[in-house]
Image (cartoon, rainbow, N blue to C red):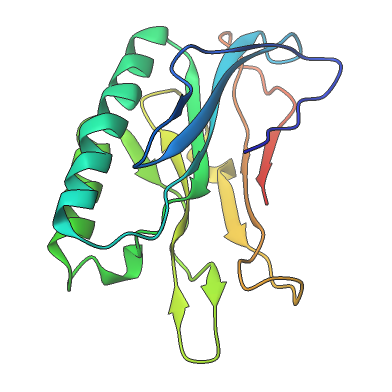
Length: 178
């Protein structure tokens, strides 16, 4: 896992970073003087295991990490290769369980189209989760999947436009997950 942070930003690696058999994650607290706020940014990789015990073990250790961020009063973005196909939410109960669990913690996935393509499949296994409890101008939350031919995983992105506490527009805060 890797996260690139601009030299102009202060950051610290959080203790909630993890590396276990079910998933690995790196979490940073990033201070942005431009936006006068802190962000929690996470990068997650969950191996492509498919048993119900694997999904349960993942949720059992991942959801408490999301929960711990709720008290931080920071905007939180978690992105990565979760190997859970959100396009199958009507077909597979573990996908719905995952969506319910992250939603209960105040997070929502911001991508809705496939992020990985093979000759026979199109899946949405790369996720960007945003803690939606923070005040943003919904008109300017932009996310998507770019098309390239470098990898079967496509580059995903999210861009936010935060309003200052006095209501003035601030510069957009762009985040990219590749």
